Image 1 (tube, rainbow, N blue to C red):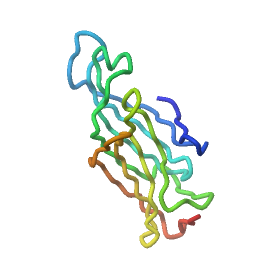
Image 2 (tube, rainbow, N blue to C red):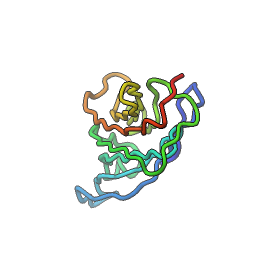
Image 3 (cartoon, helix red, strand yellow):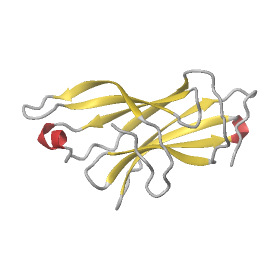
Image 4 (spheres, rainbow, N blue to C red):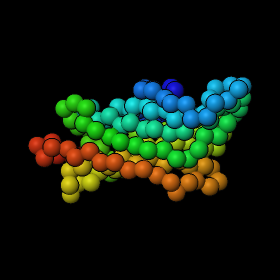
Length: 152
């Protein structure tokens, strides 16, 4: 899982580190279906890591990268170090994106700023060129009041 770049903008997005996986369905040919847990360090907020679990389709199509992964994903973000915000953040910004099918489907993680509560809110969802999925997951990381969140 390599670092993805947001098309046209050239801004760096978070890179995934696979933490582990569990098999859910045995496949005689090709890899098994599984649930994968990946970690993403927020590239603009040192000290925040998001963990995303999602289904990964196996079998022959999955092994060749031709299968479409399911839309369900779960996210949990935490302060894994001292949180610092070296530059102003956008009110809402994509932190990570990865293809979950050959052409049309992507898993996305978006960061939103809740200025009133000095909190970073992260949401994961899946979209498609024609029709996305309403399934999503959300988590929040409170930032200490001594570190106000600057906005662009």
